[in-house]
Amino acid sequence: MKTIFLCAATATALLGTQIAQAQSNVTMTGALDVYAGSRQLSGSPRSTRIDSGGLTTSQLTLQGVEDLGGGLKAEFVLGMFLRVDTGESGRFTGDPLFARNSYVGLSGGLGTLRLGRQTTGNFLNFIRTNSFGDSPTFGPTFVQTWVAAVAQGSQFMTPGAPPTSRSLTGALGTTDSTWNNAIGYISPNLGGVTVTAQWAPSEAAGVGNRAGLSAFYANGPLILALATEQIGNASVPPSGPAAAVLAKQRTWHASGAYALPFGRISAGYLDTKRDYAAIVDDSIRTWHLGANIPVGAGSVLFQTAHSRQTPDTGASVTRTTTSVGYDYNLSKRTDLYAVVMNDRFTGNASGNSYGVGIRHRF
Image 1 (cartoon, rainbow, N blue to C red):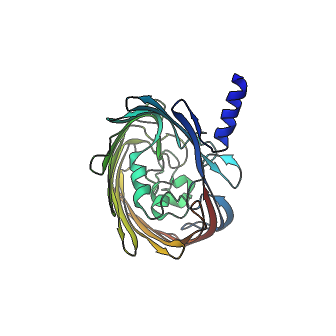
Image 2: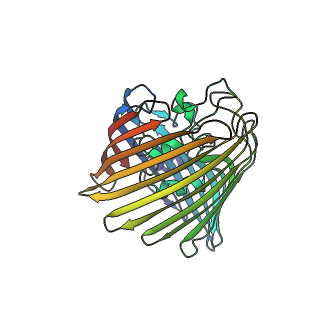
Image 3: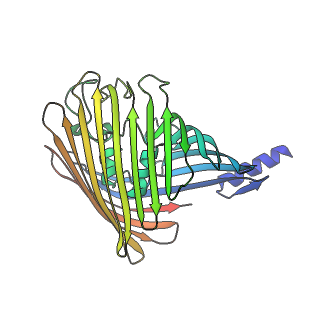
């Protein structure tokens, strides 16, 4: 009988339905996103593709909550990314199975404490306040800030063999949007303000200590967000393309959004300072401006992002990326979208991308 019950419970969870037993529940949620189109970043050759993750990185999440009584609850989350076009797990080859999240925690009147791999407060602030959300393909700020240079092309790296080569974009791509071995605290909502603090020790070669602090405010039509991250010594692996070793890195990020009668506007600014162990230090400053405007059964999406990378000695380089699209809602869970994107980077030809796709949430 025990075997039958466990098999039935597992099957129910995998089908995405809720299991309710003894004041606990487990649910499965996710998003599957595939687009067809043409991809060309500045200075890159054009490629025609059917790819996963146009407006959202495809993902599956298994999560559970147990009521322990007295206002105390236990929770767990196991979240994975996947590539729907090939059926492979992860955002890329070698990505951990549960790269999105993998933690356990306790929550109560004083807040929530979590242990394990966790999405950073900085990244959560980012996707809550920018017009393209967590789009890794067509989101201008996402592409410039969170996608590592090695994944975009050699033109986004300084000349030279590792470890002297330096990435000229994707300042937060190496540190990732989710930290391993992390302890995190999320405060209760106090007058619309939620504070998140995270810390991750250096447990592996090439990964330094990491600390993050963020605040998020939401009240009516207004959203404001502020975050900082401090990355410790040796936070970039000392081998591989664009892998200059960092002595330390710090980032400040301020962003916000406001809902007006015609739609929502958003803006943000990121400032990252990188101190390298053996090469010239630099800073990357990025601003973005966007809008989501309801039209018919969907919304017009717009965002432009501009970054300037400035070394302590030498010439600066800039990158400007702009996307315009339309997201049409077939239902509350399924939408169709079409996006065009222009990308310009110092010393390289302009690149143009476009795609049409479908996204389903469950």
